[in-house]
Amino acid sequence: MAPTVLNSGDTAWMLASTALVLLMTPGLAFFYGGMVRTKSVLNMMMMSMITIGIVSVLWVIYGFEIAFGHSADSPWYGGFSFSGLGGMVNDFTNNGGEYPIPVLVFAAFQLMFAIITPALISGAIADRTKFTSWAVFVTIWVTVVYFPVAHWVFAFGHKVGDTVTGVGYLAAKGLEDFAGGTAVHINAGAAGLALAIVLGKRVGWRKESMRPHNLPLVMLGSGLLWFGWFGFNAGSALAANGIAGLALINTQVATAAALLGWIIVEKIRDGHPTSLGAASGAVAGLVAITPACAFVAPWAAVVIGLIAGALCAMAVGLKYKLGYDDSLDVVGVHLVGGLWGCASIGFFGASAVNSIGLDGIFYGGGVGLLGKQLFGAGVVLAYSFIMTLIIGFAIEKTIGFRVSRDAEVEGIDLNEHAESSYEFASSSRGGSFL
Image (cartoon, rainbow, N blue to C red; front, side):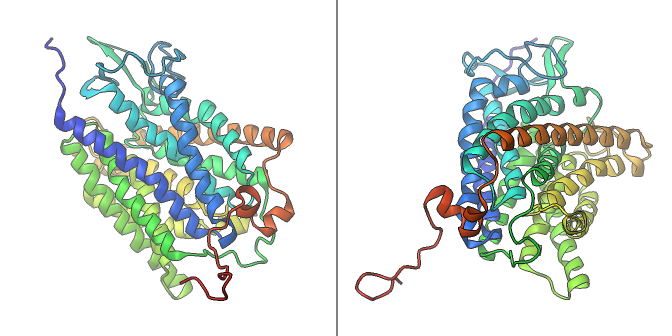
């Protein structure tokens, strides 16, 4: 067999995709930062920024090995070599087959997924979380939840000749998740629900106005997420090829349809479409199409997005009926959108557009694929929810997870960071700053 030769075009696309996915986390910080009240903006954004720092370091030390190592030959984890990614400079990616891109580029790309997943959780517990406790949570959660789940879903094994070893548990079961509907969004959504239960409701919830303080920031964040998501989905092809093109167009049209679906629901229900609804609808579409983006035709992506926008617009009200305070609708958008996106493959999956995928119900494939999708979604949801409850309650009972009532009322930015997002003080000479 001829040796693998570096493909510079594929490598360049993966380097660009990696940068695009990293941009999503600052985009998320703007999106969440605009949705909270003025006194919580910096803390909200810092929860995303500290996640970049923590997860990047852990990924090099042991995270990549747990998720994609193959020394353990286990369906549950990759290995614990603590290699620090040493000795991989000249290696090519081998994940169920050898790809002509450096393994360090693959590792960097997957790192960005590991970063944004815990950052998504932070929206569920906005306004009331100790910053140090959040950092401890991220460290533990990615170690015992994200890294193993990434192996279950994304590890397609190490191929040597005709032998493939170390395939992840859910990948071996036939779960189709192209870019992270289970490992990222269902995982984060379930964890967000668990932490919202652990920390309890914000002071004044449902009694005081907690409307977004800066909708232009929300729109900016949504736009950055949309832009970066092309790397998230199309980059998961690991090549600049037709599958990447399919994922890219499906990402665009599903997101656009979901935006429309959300604001249509708002217009019918509330009498007017809102900018917050448009931004949230776009994110709902991005979430839903993520697992399906390379397994469905573009017409199906439009349907998936339209349903996602309408479904999530209605789902965000569940917190009022069930009594949990999910501050920024992580459950309504990421958990519900992720579940729908994962299940949608069972209906719209088409081997005609991607030969590695199976046919769903609407293409004559029966209910087998839908069953695999629901099983995979259920496993990740249950594991993430239970483990997060355990981690959350352990932190709350030891170092404390929630700020004091006084600190929450005064403002978490001042109490946790000694800073304010907006400075309104007048100059000492009696004038004002312009």
